Structures are given as structure tokens and as C-alpha cells.
Image (cartoon, helix red, strand yellow):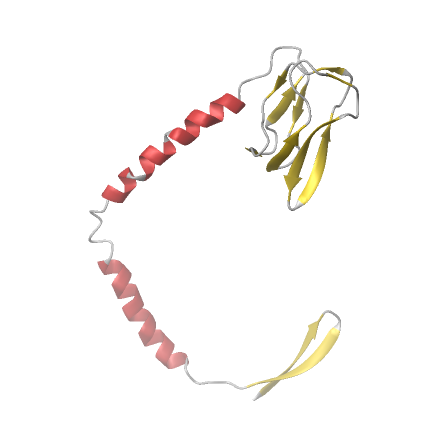
Length: 143
């Protein structure tokens, strides 16, 4: 038996640990484990499953460029400050907003964050809808 003092959150505990002599059995078990993976790479003729993800990957890039379109030169944009889900969109194209007006609600980590207008202006484009998932830096609204 070995005795150790362990401190957890400022409280010290005295712990007795029994030493087990099983280290010799671990080394022989490790050798067969390495033998199995060496045999596994031989049947590498499994590229068929790789073909299945390729069609799934094609639609994803097609959807991404729609949101990644650049804003017009000189336009002011509101970007997502963090990744999350758009719960509600309170403005539409053509709406006049003042600085501090709530444009939409972004849910991130179970918290509802109000996305506000940075300045007075007229909304020229809303690039998200309620229920959309956004990443940090995605353009939400163009002024």
C-alpha cells in the first residue's frame, strides 16, 4: 500500500493505493493488439464507402456561397458575433432602423442574444431567416 495526499478544491484527502503486479501481463497483451492493426491495413480495398460521402459533400458547398456573397461596396453590414441559431428576424428589406434597434435574436449556448443595429439606416438586405444556423462572421444584414 502507498499513501498519497490529494488536494481537490482546497480540501486535502489521504488516499491509500494498492499496488497491483499486473504490468507483466499488459506487455504481452499489447503485442497481439499491434499484430491485429498490421493485418487490418492489408484489406485496404474499401474505397467504396469513400464514394458515398462525395455526393453528400457536393450540396454543402453549393449552399455556402449564397450566404458568403460579398456586400456591395460602401455598404454597412451586421455580422454574427458568435455561432448559433437565428430564432427570429424582426426586420425586412426596406425597413428604416435606428442605432440600437433589435434586428434579430441569435441563440447561442442556450442564451438569446439581441443583434442590434449599429447605426441609423435602411435595411437593404436580410441574409438569414428564422431557424438558420450561422457561424461567426456570417453576414446577417446589409444596410
